[in-house]
Image 1 (cartoon, rainbow, N blue to C red):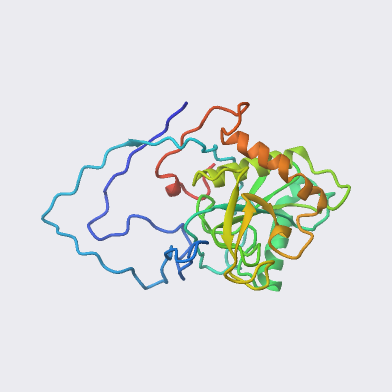
Image 2 (image 1 turned 180 degrees about the vertical axis):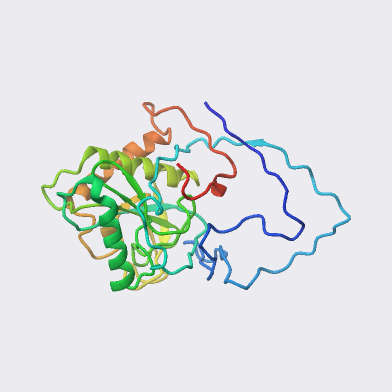
Length: 296
């Protein structure tokens, strides 16, 4: 088992913020997690949490390098950044909202043509981006990630790929979840490309593994909107990797892709080291959330 070491250095002056939002993103508005009564994860711009008084005469403990192995973490797959697909950042709401962590994945399809060339996907993303910001008023792409038929993963909504960014993908269940959209239309009789399935599984395994969530298990989420399948405030059980239709009255992600979700869950669980045939357990650094959002 490989272990990664990470050193935490106290280099900021006393009272200075040690964690900052990604470049170009402000933490405006507090977003709670999916569990009732969970604390806010961010504060409005200009506001601050209650001040803690620190006795400067007392020495701080020395911070040394630490090694932490998460038993069911999966490696981070390669993700094409917004910069790389040339997202026009002036189109979006500059504010990103965050939950306390990602506990479930919702799978979607973009309901766009399947006969695309993978080299043209960045242009497709820019068109989707324009439609969802200008025409739907979502402030940004609704999906956190998008995957093409060649298995390439793209960063969707801004805010940091390794962070629990709240998207606009599943009404009632956007908080504490990640939306992954398969580029194309996957209705009855359409074959879902193997490369796409594997990429979705790898991405889901990584995101869920950040909190140790079993990709093949069940989670409980609480609805925040009466327009979902569940009344606001209702707690419901979901697969950790679910289809959009499980939470909302829709055919998304299409019959063909929905029927492949059991296989995707199994692949994701294997990547997390939860089966006898799984790869060796991968350790991740304690400061994973500090990685730059465009890292590969």
